Image (cartoon, rainbow, N blue to C red; front, side, top):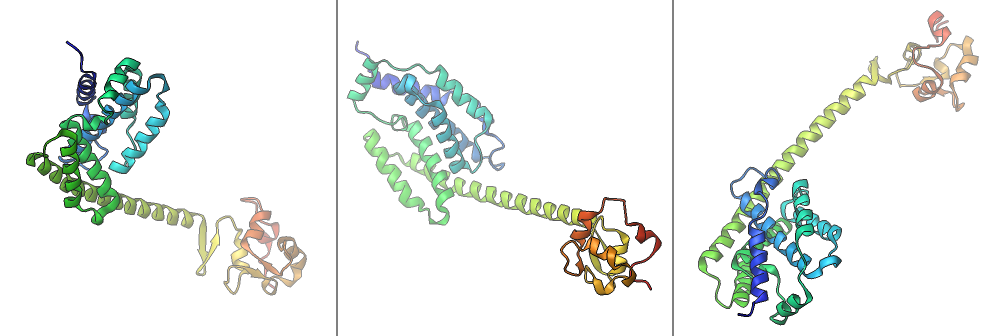
Length: 291
């Protein structure tokens, strides 16, 4: 009895895809929703089937890093989250353990018409449709037309399998579209809340740090590390010390601090010249600006 290699290959891909690793690998990547698991399962099943098909066809020419990169991008487009490390490891293991088909087997399969793995069985076809719905809804949002897209899916189903798409399958696709909208809306709301909380925390930390790095004297904020004489000499409280505020008997000392020679002492000029906890000697004995 001759072997139908196309049927054999499609059954092998389907069985391997449906019997893949535990769905728990992706738990936690989507909002806590009982409907999210169907999309996780669908993604895992279809992508594994496609991977097996490519390895079987390409053999030693299969580019694992390139395919993994494509998979990562697709996971981000569908779920809005990075691909979990356990899933990456599972894909790598599958690629290494899947044997290539012989040229004779490939020739027999292609003679009957080369088709995508998701077009070989109603199970994979439906799973792929669910994943595609979530991906498109995430990208298009309110512009996504569920009825129009369902018509395309039903038309493709009839072309692939030679019979109209059963009503129960159409209803399943419609329900998955509604679930995808709910999941994406919940995920985005959660992300927005987390971002707001993170911004609030960062703002509070920044304010606290800024407060610790500066001090107020007479309503003026001075950078931390300035000697006390600076605020005392700043008699007009403008945050800098002008030559007109300085003790006229100590003009030579003023020029030491006024590195740019503009007649104004700015905090940054003083901070560049002093060492922490080493105030000028004159600050201890005589208050600048006093007569």
